[in-house]
Amino acid sequence: MQRILMGVFRIMPLLFGLGFLAPLLTQIIARAGWTPPAGLSPLILGLAVGGAWGGFATLRGRWL
Image 1 (cartoon, rainbow, N blue to C red):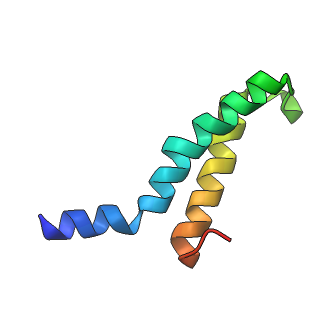
Image 2 (cartoon, rainbow, N blue to C red):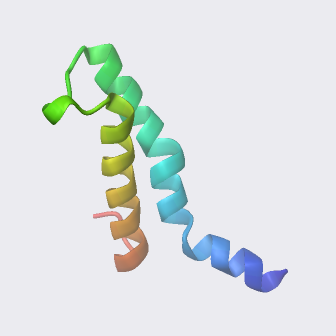
């Protein structure tokens, strides 16, 4: 059980990026009336940005 929790906590920034930042960015894009480039849906753009930022934070160990 401890190994499972340690594994989940190790990837927590990625989960936060996909589970919180992506929907937040999607809602911001939709409410502001912006159109994402290249015909992407706001959800795909939110997932790409949130996943990239969360992945970066997971690998580097910091958000900035």
